[in-house]
Amino acid sequence: DTEVTQTPKHLVMGMTNKKSLKCEQHMGHRAMYWYKQKAKKPPELMFVYSYEKLSINESVPSRFSPECPNSSLLNLHLHALQPEDSALYLCASSQDRHNEQFFGPGTRLTVL
Amino acid sequence: GQQVMQIPQYQHVQEGEDFTTYCNSSTTLSNIQWYKQRPGGHPVFLIQLVKSGEVKKQKRLTFQFGEAKKNSSLHITATQTTDVGTYFCAEDTSGGSYIPTFGRGTSLIVHP
Image (cartoon, rainbow over all chains, first blue to last red):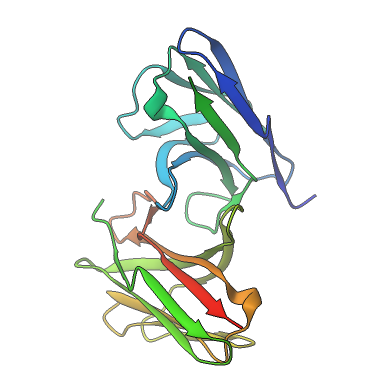
C-alpha cells in the first residue's frame, strides 16, 4: 500500500460546527503532516507529527486541533472555523522528516 | 524558515518547446525536493537532490542542484500536454530542523 488516504473528499460546514478530517497511511512512515492550500498558492505547513508526537505547530489558530492516535492515523479537528479557512487541506507522510513526502488527495473544505 | 524564491510564476509554451523553472535560496540547503501538482490534484513527489552540483534525469526532465547548494532548476525537454501543472520546489534549510517550505510554484501551460 503506497498511498495516503483522506476523508472526506469534500466538506461544507457552518462556523458553529465541529468536524474532523482524517488521514491514513500504511507505509510505515513515522512523520505525518497537515498542510493548507489556497487556490493558486503553495501548500502551507500547519503541523508536523514525528513518531506520533507533535513536533511542529506553525502558529496555527486553536480552532484547528491535530491528533495522532497511532502511527498510521492523523486527524484534524475543526471547531468554530471562519470562512477564510476554506481551502484544500492536504495530509502527507514521509519515512522520517528528511525524506520525500507522499500526499493524500486532500479534503476540500468550505466554511459558510 | 526562509521561503525559497521560485521563478517564473507562469510559463506558456507550445507543445514541443522546452521549459525551465528555477528556485533560489539565500541560505544553504541540505537538500531540495521537487513536486508536481496537476490541476485539481495533489502534489506528487518527483525527486530529491542532496549533493552539491548534482544532476538527475527522469526521461525528459532534468534536475540540477547548484554547486553552492543555494539554487536548483527543473528543465523539461520537448514539453507535452501531459506536463501541464504546477511545479514546486521544497526547501530544507541546513539547520537540521526540517520545516518543509514550498516555493510559490511555476504553473506550466502547454498549448497543443
